[in-house]
Amino acid sequence: MSEKLGKIEHHLFEQLIYNKCGHQREEVIEGAQFGVDVSVIDLPGGMALALTSDPLSLIPSLGLQESAWLSVHLMANDMATTGHAPMYGQFVLNLPSSFSKSDFKIYWEYIHKFCSEIKIAITGGHTGFIEGQHSTIAGGGTFITVAPKNKILVSKSAESGNAILVTKTCALSSSAILAMSFPSTVKNKAGMEIYQHACNSFYHTSSLQDALTAVGENNDHLNVTAMHDVTEGGVLGAIYELAVASGNGAVIYNNKLPIAEVQAEICNIFSIDPRYCIGAGSMIITCKKEASDEVIARLAKRNIPCVEVGELCEKKDGITLIENEKKTDLRYTEEDPYWAAFFSASKKGWK
Image (cartoon, rainbow, N blue to C red):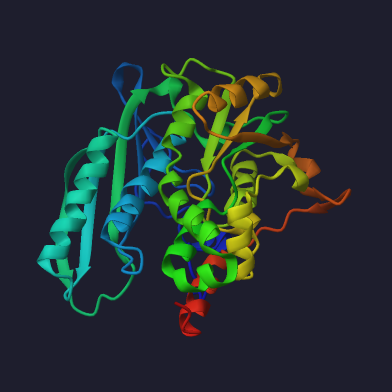
């Protein structure tokens, strides 16, 4: 089908999946869509059910605890875009036959721990050991939450004229994983301090608190219109996806994009552009223009950095990036450069 690593390309999703999603049920408010993190199903009494699914990580070079963290929090990040925390979780584990029961015990205890910390009840799934399974993907999971229908946000709800905010920094998760996977290389090329900061940033790859802080404890900050998790394609890719999903254009100011020194250093070592790298832990937030400073201040009180990087506009105006006072169409990359960088470093024998 495709030689591209990572998620299926947009055009293939539209061609092969979008209009082939089984029986159409009227209670499905939001189904499978490009740039939308969750599906939403109408329930009686003004409530709705939100669901999101993602692969589960099992990355030996990171460790069992870190893999469990990614397995839980990458899904939680998607659910966070609704403005609500996940409540229930299903896990399907297809583990390597060589994966020892003692290692599985450690991995699962961390899954349990991280779910417990954010109040997710694990309600079922499937666990098996598969011959020939050598992937860093250990299966898949689904998180579910129930909330008032009128208080569930989706990325397609963003509006023209909204400010675009970005929390934390570009390339947060990709830089942390690269540093932890190739520690000797990063220490030699960037120094011990950068390496330590990059490793420490790994546990900042949850954006759940970002989202819950933005909307407020009771989802009462109605000036927030939409959110989108930063995954493959990085901050710029996430903004592009949100604009497309909501039927808008966008103007992004390159000099306002947050790229912290640590992330810039790591990306430089691996020759990748931090603006387009997997950035789990950062959240794209759109809000009414007049509420931008208020949302940023609310996040600052929780020590979550956030900056305004642009605004949504009419679809006819396109999705553009202003860089060095030049306005160009935003390049949307189908393949995140992180994947090629990781496998290239492995092939080179980087340690």
